[in-house]
Amino acid sequence: MTQTELLQRIKEVAYLEGDFTTRAGKKTAYYIDKYFFETLPTILEPLSSALATLFPSSDTYDRIAAPELGAVSLAAVVSIKVNKPFVIVKKESKGYGTKRMIEGRYAATDRMVILEDILTTGGAALRACDILTQEGIRIVSVVGVLNREEGAFENITTRGYPVSALFTSTQLRAC
Image (cartoon, rainbow, N blue to C red):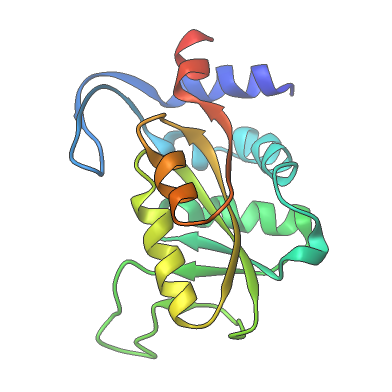
């Protein structure tokens, strides 16, 4: 599947028009329902291959980090493509078990790539960066599926992290 065909398929299954509010609280006339494309094997397989091309050289990072919940399925399939383990960065600590914010094996000396689905303002990705860096982990880059072009790239680069995405909302709406 070509990148254009992949984008068209994502739009076909996940692009919704109407009156929506983004995670950042902004009103929008369109919404990309990530679960509509992140749960389909026919999209996940080519998407994982395409995302893997945005990752830096394998010797520059140790693991993939996925903010829960949306990016977890992406991290699982990309982890297989790039042969790197992944961790899940939780939204909140549970009151039971280990009570950790980071699930999965990692070391404080690890270097990680944050994998995100939809980058709107970059809030979820930056929150994951904060949690990981508090543990001593170095963030190598942030990689997303879709840049909604609403400040995420600016916010992430301002914090010093390289960022890339497969597609932009302009490309999605035009296809």
